[in-house]
Length: 230
Image (tube, rainbow, N blue to C red):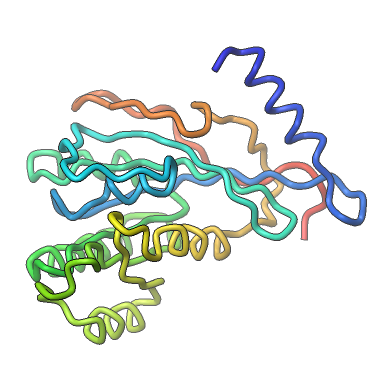
């Protein structure tokens, strides 16, 4: 997308108004996806952003960055999605990506109990080191492979309830609950922050790969602009 098209898009968003004539607000939030390799983090993001699923998805190197915009009531919510690599050698880079995040999805594979155990470790790390008000969701992915299930829904739901997490089983392959889990997070994010949200780094539905050792763009505290705060 050219800079001219980006400006046109920005102007269109700026001119949106709510039913009562007030300008619609725009909020921007950083969200990180964490989990072991091959649990389907990249597939969930691609399904949500592009409506696509690839049976054989290459492993993420470092992290991939995409954006998607959704509407919640009278607010336009722009989600900055950081899809982190799951391989062990990249785990030390994770804090670089969840630092400053307002939301996180911790993903496990319902057919692999070890990935559920590791998901609990990620949740503990976020609770200890991430922002204190971070919204965390737990996604039990590959629900289309329920006949090979190793993690029971009840066990995951109990764990989520005990830790205050949003929980859904998802399938990037069939699209089951993919939009739902992202929307559930978007609805829980605070939308009464009076900070600038016009600091998008990429166009919607764009993707880049961040090579190991590269610093991600400067942190964004997220927030809302336009319209009246509630």
